[in-house]
Amino acid sequence: MSGSILLSHPSLQDPNFNKSVVFLSNHCEDEGTLGVILNRPLGKQLFQLDDQFKNFALGEAEVFDGGPVDKEKLIIAAWDWKDNAQTFRLHFGIDISKAESLREENKNIKIACFLGHSGWSPGQLENELKVDSWLVSSLNLGLFEKVHTHADCWKAAISRVSDEMKLLANEPENPSFN
Image (cartoon, rainbow, N blue to C red; front, side):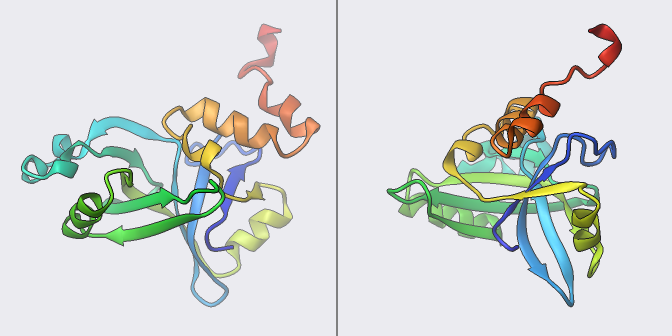
């Protein structure tokens, strides 16, 4: 499942993952799964977290809440989509120097920073998939272009799964308001 997207099921109420879109960077039966939440922007740029990044061009990179694990750890990712918008090149867990050099080589490369990550122990994610906590989806450019807006990104992605998911995604937060 490495390179896939997890979409939280509309019924998943865990506040860590409610209406989340998670990119899985690594999945291994023996070691578990690691990913980052794509649709939780913190409304801050990297230089606002730490003054040391003010002197870097990438200090303006947007910062996201990557998940509930290791919230003090910063993960930097860079990616660019190829011509057909179905293929991308990802650099995950890179340092600021590598991100800077990638940007110098390719001005179109996108950079994002994540505080924390999402993690599952071996077999845990598979069990959560069996009880329909998550839906697995493929990564696409349209989804990545909407990651800055939490609700729109999740709704757009989950609505493509099926008509039933589209209905569930559009339910009001509080059904008593109907």
